[in-house]
Image (cartoon, rainbow, N blue to C red; front, side, top):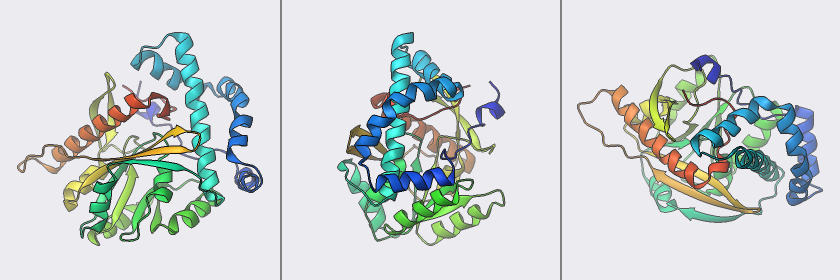
Length: 298
């Protein structure tokens, strides 16, 4: 499959601005678990009428986890259902409700970096409910700048910004004018933090082929080039749903074996490969929480 075809994922939260406003209003009247129940019987119809999202997930379970057709279908349903739950949890936070029980692994490393003078990079992915980390990892030492897709509706961007601002998090929209590049450089120069997705390519040719779940896939290297350029640490954060109201937050340092004489491009490739390894480990533990709805592998 061609690279151009694999990059057609749009990166936008579904629904109109009016629908998103209505959902926020609904959360103020109805509990999130009630909405889970309402959503459950709707998922099969969504899968039926949106096969472009269903097929890659079904193939993911068939090819990379060797599931039978029936088991792959069941897991694909659960994947869609969990994705819907994560979206509802996110809107629950937007509406001012935060009733989640939390478990942490590696949080001391995050606290150590936050307390240090240097900036660092958070490598995120489309697993679990990463955006909740901005609301759940409380800190007031550094500003965390999160790169977000610039095509979201004003309603989504407004609610994100309002909820994240309380935790010293600002949003940097990724736009065609490349203004986000200057904002990122400025933030790292000041010892602040950059958070960005590192498992999808949005038209950029800065990527490297990595072994991933018994296949080969391209991973972007932009974040890791910045880590090499500014000589800052990189961590991966995964926020995985473990129950109706429980999340487990994993903080994993990305520490590839770098050679001082290597070129920046080679070092960035080592970072990307190490990140792909950490992502593979978490996906094997939570295979139904990788929300990837386009053809990923070569």
